Image (cartoon, rainbow, N blue to C red; front, side):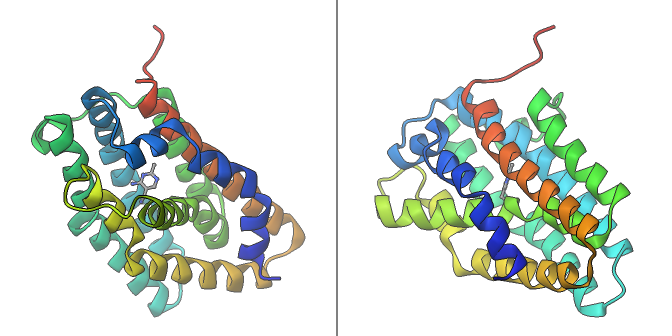
Length: 223
Ligand SMILES: Cc1ncc(CN)c(N)n1
């Protein structure tokens, strides 16, 4: 079995919890409050900024031109395309993107998740770094596919754009590009490095679940 298939299998209970998370159910049912949507976009805008920074670190660890090109394209994808789902949530929330893009204090969970990715990137190999990033596209691709199948959103669905964005085959292609790189790097890695790759991957899956909770519960700092 491929390394990435093993990872997906081990993380299956976390994926199932994500699919049943009240925020994800709220996307399906169109039942999220403006506050929850705005809180998500404020935090996610900053999360994706850090994601671009980590791609920069991935480039600095890459020796193959194809890898440098892929990471470079992914930075452009975040900057040029991934603002569409944010705009969808912002419009439904009644806030402008200008407002939601203002620097805001990272919540405990957003801080924890972004620091986890930065730690994996600074301390680890390219394989470790990619395993910390991979749940980001993969969980959203699977959420997109499931919601598209379940909801079959039409023009009247408030989150049609969000669901169709993440169910698009382009996102599936990105996931396959990640998987082929991770499998190649895992094949060359020793047991200790593979264990760190798995740990980073599972931690990011758990952080994905917690990011949805952060938005749903309007998480902030207690003091
Ligand atoms: C927290 C999080 N995870 C994943 C995605 C999808 N790239 C996102 N926008 N934000």
